[in-house]
Image: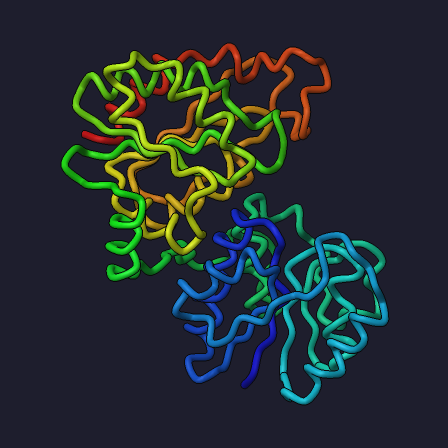
Length: 342
């Protein structure tokens, strides 16, 4: 059997997708599994042993471009896929498997996908967690009445490359002499997921005083936030705070994150990477909810406020006050660090 999966576009969603891929390989151990994903997610696929081939999606997120989708579908038709699973809910994501003439096309109802999918699932609400919705697509429709029908789900588990890890340590002049507190203060989704940098700085200050060093992870978009955190520390502590934002590839971020003694992260792709590496983790939630996308790891503490307007799932605070984040005190996170580290 040859299976094509149209993967999601967000890093965190792609990490959670691994539960689907592991399930597919358990059910069909001899199957060849190919996954289409944006360039920025392919590094994750390369760390998933279940994925035999990562195919780069040549179109940007949100781009329709019907002729390009048709051409890609016709190119993939030569692969002779037996089954396509479409993880996103959009109409456009279902077009390539149709153009590739894949006989069985599985996915959730989504937007106007009647005819595009011939194994259409319509009871998405019966699967509260995103990871459950992904994994349910691996099973026959008749068996998946609700999430209680799912077996125990395999959690994502990214592999680590020790050689690449050592090279990254050398390149960035890092060492493991002190235990490592990894901070992930960014969130691609929007400001309603970002805990204030001054709160992160207070956590860094306390943990450095107790013997940790701090590594701040993130993309180039998070450089200013990381610099603000470091600049807020007493000068004597700054040598123990290392800014990795914008300096690492995703491969390097995975391998370096694997060295962390504990991770504090907003609800972001890096949070799910830390969970898939089974690092002790404190997940900070603002506008979103762990009831939908929880970190899947053994040692996890989730912190959030209980104000009545959260979770709103908005990119920006619709009330303009961001109380769900600003009113979450650093002490709560420091206490959670102690709990997951013990």
